[in-house]
Length: 77
Figure (spheres, rainbow, N blue to C red):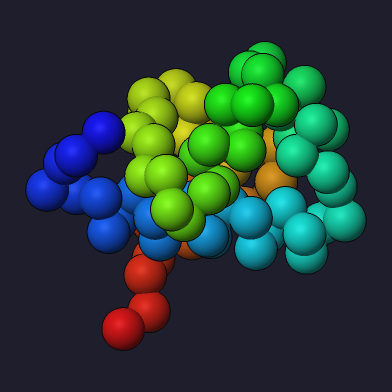
């Protein structure tokens, strides 16, 4: 994927990985909670592989992590 939003997808993936680790859960556990494959979850989090996700998946991830969606979309400078 080569998008003008690659940097935002990378930051989103890093935020998801941060909150997942903060919650002490594996990619597999989060993927199962969200209803996606572990490979897709890994691709979402991988900074070298910007991966877009649907709003539905984003909201499901936020719910599974127990954080508001806007936290996942807040990118410090």
